[in-house]
Amino acid sequence: MTLMEAAAQADELAQSGDERQLATLRQQWDDEVESAARSSDYRERAVAYRAIGQFRYRQKLELLRRGLEDESPAVRGSALVSVQGLSKTSPGLVNSMRPLLHSMASTDANQAVRRLAIVCLRNGSPQRETIVLLNGLAEDDDEDVELRSSARTVAAELKKRAGARS
Image 1 (cartoon, rainbow, N blue to C red):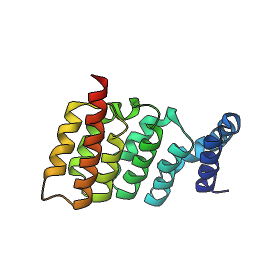
Image 2: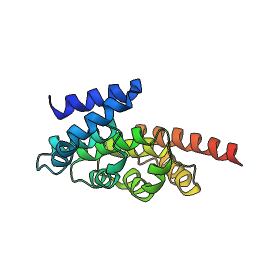
Image 3: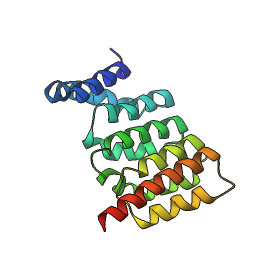
Image 4: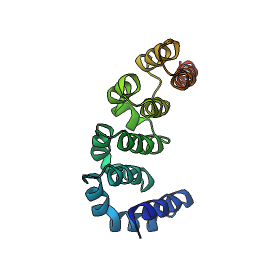
């Protein structure tokens, strides 16, 4: 079985709620994920960072942060997919990485990575600086149409949540 196959199996186990089997699978593949994340091949690193989310590895958040800073857009994108998945139930992960996500959403050279960073910000707490950043991106005519649309949508969701809290 490959890491990609094991990660898909882990995702199925997590979705079905089989925590015992998931824990066993995590333990079996822990070293492989770490090794792949350090590979010189960006494709292996991308699979590893995507696997962190599929395995629901909450203890590998520092490793995941390194993936967000990788030179390869494919690796950064895979790490963002994991951040997005892991943060669905708790805003703490996005909140702890907010400055990095802001930077990625604003300045990453890859448009898909920028849009993924914006999607991740949706799962964080509705903080003013994030809403201001997203509104700025949404209104910037020099930005890609899809990026502007994503920023507008996420900013509106965060504003709505912020209004519901007050």
